[in-house]
Each structure stands twice: as structure tokens, then as C-alpha cells.
Image 1 (cartoon, helix red, strand yellow):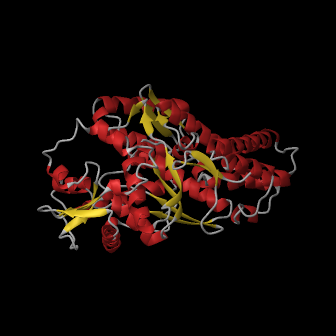
Image 2 (cartoon, helix red, strand yellow):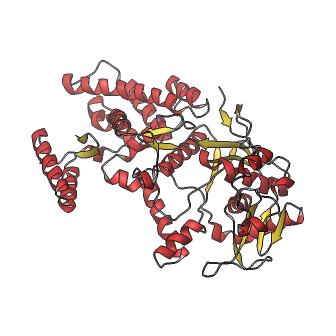
Image 3 (cartoon, helix red, strand yellow):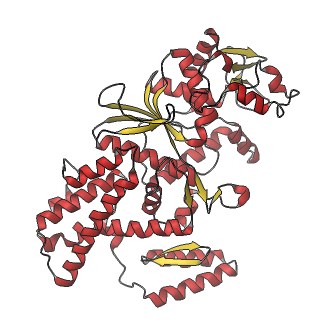
Length: 486
């Protein structure tokens, strides 16, 4: 079976072919850096990290670009609130992004272009649009004339006439920006400078770019006119990705991307995540609770990437339990190699090279169907459970009837496939302190922690949690109480 992908643009699943044989040019619309990354960002970054890993696994040379939007109204608002500057705010949250992604095991992109570092490319693209009749200046702003692009709406399926009919009662004709436009749905490519805001010199006066033009320019500058995969969250289909297509293709006359891929959204206990509902969870908050980053990756991979997922206490507990199963399998070789008489080089050298067997083929057959990672996980769980059964036999009987070389192949296969999903484990994580606690002692400390939290003594609560963590015990807080595991 060859890789097939669901293309948002064509609304069907298609065989994957690349512009250049053996190479993939992939762009992911990254984050706007005005706050810490949340669960939605975690899902998107994990999904596209694994997509990239899988493409590399099946032999593609992938050039993966992810941008930072570092000039935006939200960043400027945060800077005003803090009496700071756009640059300081953006830099702080870019660094926080890298910290969070490192904890989740996200591989770094090949390049992270920033909007503020792409100003020449942005202005060049706006100039090209203006020369071709797709853009017009108005009182220091520059707007894209959506009616001039005949295919506007082809990604989202929206039609301008329907949008105009639906918005007719909501348009405020007195609005200053509305009065600058020739048509209500024209969007800004360049915004005139406002007092106290950062601005750049341009042929249209001092100002800054609109959001949509930034990505079009960064794709063009880093990857060329046509790329293979343009990825992002489903919330970006309209207007952001729709507008990217209109901007880029109006200038080049070529497809911006041959495949448009979108991951589904994240809900929390069945509701949309938002600060107003009090269910807004950042990545660092989640991991600081003691949830294993590998369990978060597994939680994301257990769902079809295009479908919404619901983050609940039960869901993360199920993912945590699933991770324990896989982790035990991954550590099999380190724990039992001596009894099996394996060559120590099997543990030191990279065991992921050039393995071909039925399990690898089953994994690829599943994932080749529009990145069906849950199907691939089924193979991984089978391998892990097989190794765990063998490990129990070795522990209780001192030996196993299964030939050692077969177990080695099974273990290497598991490591190979788990690594495609970014699931890794090291034996150091399994070492238990000499003064390990009994179950009763753990329960007593949890009761002490709950009393401290009730008394709002959060310093003591954190101290107890950290003490347990240092002794190999992880706590997971939920509405039902506190669960723990070693």
C-alpha cells in the first residue's frame, strides 16, 4: 500500500506524490507568541512532529519549516499590560515554547522563520499583488481584493455571495476600517502605523503586516512557490489558510501547496477550552502535575488526527496506563539482556536501522491510510504485551522457551516503531530509590498533601508532591481525587 492523505482542498483521500521525488517540503503554521502553549498547541505540534517522523521513516528527505508569529495585536496588548515591548514578550514566549516542546519530545524544525525577520519578503509579495491588480492601497493600509481572485473560497468551501448575505446585518458601515475597503471581505495586507506601536518603513508608509501575508511570504522565502504539505489546526482553514492561497497563488499562478492537512481541535471535558470557562490548560501546567510527557503523546496518537479529541481525567489516565505497557516493553532489553545472553552492542548501537519484518509492514500498512496512527499503535501494543509476558516468565521462571534472537528482533522492532511516534524510554527512569515507600506510606503522604491544599498551604502541598516524585511516585489530580502510580 502507498501513502494516501486526506486533502482538505479536494475533500478526498489521495495518493501522496511529491514535487521533487524523494523529498518533502512541509510548512506548519506555528504559534502566535503572546502566552504559554496550551493543550491545543500540544496536539498540533505532536501530530505534525509524528507526521514528519513517519515520512522520514518511510524514506523521504523532509524539510520542515515552522513559523513564529511575533507581531500581532495580542502580543502588543500583552506588552501594554506589562508595560513592556513586543520584542520582550515575543522572545519570552518563544523560549517558553522551546522548553515545553522539549519536554514533549518534539523534534526541532529545520528552521523557525519569524514575521519580523521576513519584512522584505512580505513587502515584496504585497508589491507583486498590487502590480497584478489583486491589492489596493487605502489611507496608509493595503487590502487584498478578494473578488479579484476567482477561486476564493476553494479551501473552505465558502462562497463570497453567501458570506455577504450572512453578514449583511452585522456590518458596521460606520467602522473606520470598513470605510477603507472596497468590499466588506477584503482583508489587510499592510496596516498603517498607530501611535506607540512598532512600525516598519514601506512604500505605503510606516506600518506593519497583516497576519495572513506573513505566512505566505515565509513559505515563499523558505520553500519556494509550491510546497508538498501545508499543515495546521482546523481552526485555520478559514480565513487564514484561505487567504494564504489567495495571496500566494494570485502572484505565482501555481498551487501554494499540493496537500492541505488539518488536525482536529481539543475539548476539555466536552467543552471548548477557554479561559472564561476555567478549563484552559497549558502544557507546563499539565506536565507539572506529574503527567508523563509520553502519556500526553500517546493520548494524542490514540485518536484519528483529523477528529476532535476530548481531554478528560479518564482519557489521560487511560493514556498513562497505556504508556506504562509500552514503556515496560521498551525497557525489556535493558532489564533482561544479560539473562538472554545478548551482545551488549545491541543496547548501545542504534537498533532502528534496516529492520524489515511482518510487524513493520503491518504498521506501515495501517499508517499509510491517512496517517492512521491508532492503527499503528495496535501493532506497538501487541509487541509490548508480548515482551512483557516474556519478561514475567523470565522473572518468575528464570528462563524462557522463546529463542533469545527472536526476542531481540521483537524488542528492536518495538523500539523502531515506538520511535516513529516519538515514544522513548530509558532504563534510568526505572531505577527505584533504596528508601522506596510502601503503598500505605504513599497514601498517608497523599492525605497530608490534601490537608495542606485544603488549608491553602500550597508550598507544603508542592513539597509533598516533589518528595513523592523523587521516590518514583507520580500523582495525577482529578475531580475524583488523586491517583498515583510508581
